Length: 178
Image (cartoon, rainbow, N blue to C red):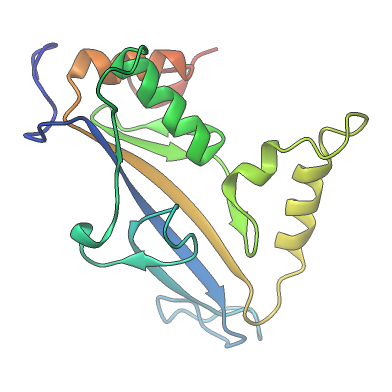
């Protein structure tokens, strides 16, 4: 794709979201029907995600999800806005696919959010939110849900997407910058 070519036919640059929600169901099988440790089975649901409308729900049809739209007149460049939105929603970005999809680095555990992991509940212990999320995740019980997410940039040029990737410390090949 040429560096000034738009990555989609979307008129306004938009950031769509997908998520996977895993729910522990207490069975002896995974979502794929494979055997697992007794009581540690789960079901999985993936789809389009609207974090402002319903954080713990996904949709089969993208039309049922509300993207984040690059606002007219925003003083930030589209690449800077894209990087800022990805961090605001995912809290950290682990990688991107050299096209337009950016993958979150964290997993949220219900009733939490992906951004819980960067919260600073006390000035003396900034890692407390990370520790609490880790504990919630490890004490898995029937009905517990977890969520992972990715952002998909539509209507941005390749240069804008690459700018966002660089600002996030990523480079082509989906590896973090050293």
